[in-house]
Amino acid sequence: MTPPLLGLEQVTIGYGDLTVVHDVTLALRQGEFVSILGPSGCGKSTLLRAVAGFVPVKGGRISLNGEDVTRQPPEDRDIGIVFQNYALFPTMSVFENIAFGLRVAGTGSRDIRAKVDAIAEVAGILDQLPKRPAELSGGQQQRVAIARSLIMGTKVLLFDEPLSNLDAKVRQTMRREIRRLQAELGFTALFVTHDQDEALSMSDRIVVLNGGGLNRPAPPGRSIARRKPLLSATSSVPRTPCCQPARHGCSRNCTCKRVKVPMCDARI
Ligand SMILES: Nc1ncnc2c1ncn2[C@@H]1O[C@H](COP(=O)(O)OP(=O)(O)O)[C@@H](O)[C@H]1O
Ligand SMILES: [Mg+2]
Image 1 (cartoon, helix red, strand yellow):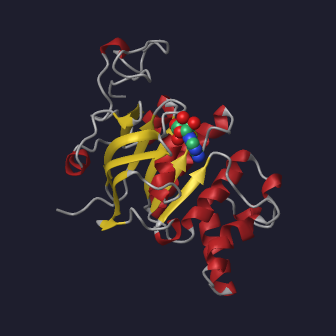
Image 2: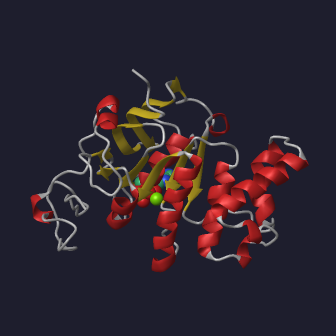
């Protein structure tokens, strides 16, 4: 059987004596867009940082294309991460921000120019390249952050609540833009959010991080086989009778004993 592009097997993560993420198993296949939905403080950022290699795991295994990367440093993993606060270098131009990884890797100037221009065009920021990040809108800054992560040919992109700082209208646009970029560039995405509308509108599949563990984690092969089309809730989202009939008319205030995040489970 083909291994998943990104695999987490019984991953447990914590800080000192504190265990934040318990026994998480998840598999993403090539080109999939999976969202992890959970309330603030449940361990979403911790999980992403561990996948990127910035936080060590206490137990379990992380694999990329079948290769065990659990103990590899971040720079040896073919994984990019996009943060809520963009994390751009404020004194560098947009061009230099995007070019940064290529410069560190010793790529020649002409190649850098061509690659930065190409990715900036796809990201819709070609005319912003000479500016500093502070001269850009929030949505444009997030496009720069995404372009910077993708320019190294990254196959897996992790998104840590990347749209939370944007106003509602830009957030809607950026949801579509991120999916368009994914379709054009073919990366595989693991996206975390506390916003269920965002998860439902963007994802091929949603899993709920609840109390440090995934709800109904499916074994890798099974979760891949159960992939549903974009814009449908998936089998990874637990059915919660109190939330039915779901999206249309579902009470925002409804709470469920089994799932802390109010969930809707109807097909859109
Ligand atoms: N560097 C750290 N050291 C100790 N505890 C941390 C650290 N980072 C996060 N935590 C704790 O881990 C838990 C999960 O945090 P986090 O992963 O940031 O959650 P989320 O992203 O879902 O809001 C919180 O209780 C938080 O206080
Ligand atoms: Mg977080």
